[in-house]
Image 1 (cartoon, rainbow, N blue to C red):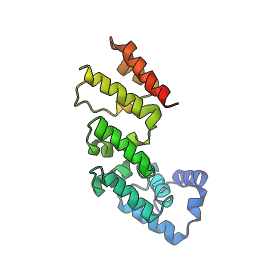
Image 2: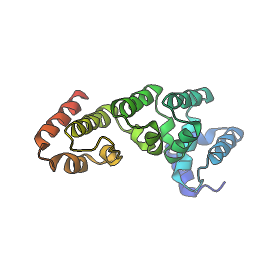
Image 3: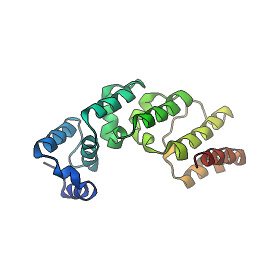
Image 4: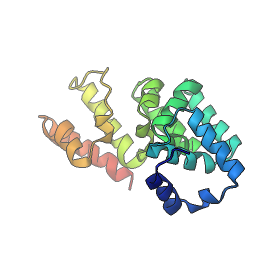
Length: 187
């Protein structure tokens, strides 16, 4: 198969039911993941198997459609899946909410999200929306260019985010207050 033992052990420990699939079905999923261009030696390969075995074909198609509605091509979606297989395990509601935030509220291209698929895995309430509010404020004050696109803004740890994007600014008190208000709304 070409899958390292450590990845098989990870699969057996975390999702043993996957190994109980019929050999025919498991082989079909294995081949599908391989044709998507994922490397069997990488952990992402096993995660892709888990993702595909966790949903029916019709659910997979619905999720493809959810991303297509935001202008992503099948190729972009599959490339995002190859980078981060959990990209396709989100509910359609979460996909719509996250894409709405980035595309409609922030004005980012949907292709940016497809190229950085881990963004969709973060909590909308606890991370994405509060940080998007800070970004919108920074842009409105001319402190960051409207064309600013950075995954770091959203994926940085809380301490790094505060240090890099809030604390170093003269307006830090106002920005921090806005950020904390948005965080408190999520609780």
